[in-house]
Image 1 (cartoon, rainbow, N blue to C red):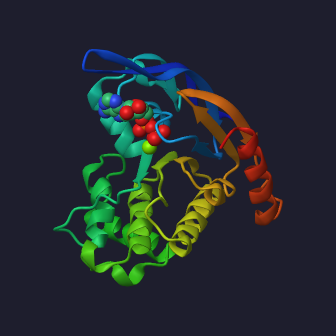
Image 2 (cartoon, helix red, strand yellow):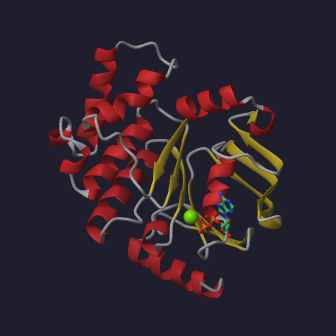
Length: 252
Ligand code: ADP
Ligand code: MG
């Protein structure tokens, strides 16, 4: 397997009221193509900060991040923005969508903005519709964002994150605002995408969500305290039970 994301000695320091907060302290890890990695850890341990730093959404203080062979720390803001748009997909806990656009128009927006594939608007629409079909939400294409459920909206966010065929999806608590049923649906869709080849890194508080991934990184105080490989061939129940045992050992 080859590496898609390589992180070396990543540090992130915030300065608030002249006080230094070393949120990430020399974090190193790598993710191979095709992996689905969950980041877990206590609240405030730096999970979101890590996700944003390695995906170029936020500047790092020190260290190296290499994504698809490119060093983020050496890239200009314009090139970073282009890389985020073309090669990365993002999903958040709060489902940010534009209020004055239909669900489908929201989904295709990144493709309309991208210069990656010079396809016509018609083709882009078709691709958006295909994604919606795949995620089982074809019937809400023309709806406003306030006319659909949280689970539907989050599946629409997954469609949007996929519209430019990203190499990797970064998700910050994608199921954090959903009930169990919607959370399971969203995770099933993300797992399918991953099994289709898309690499995923997601932050979660939920062991049931993490048990569907292939590896878990456990972060405490801005450092990786442990990591755990998951064998998807085993039953979900076994995976959950064993992961929970490991999390207990980690002090979860
Ligand atoms: P987690 O996602 O694990 O809950 P975060 O990465 O959001 O944790 O935050 C880690 C630490 O960084 C916290 O102490 C938080 O207060 C601090 N922090 C996060 N974002 C900022 C910011 N924009 N400015 C200053 N401090 C921040
Ligand atoms: Mg967070």
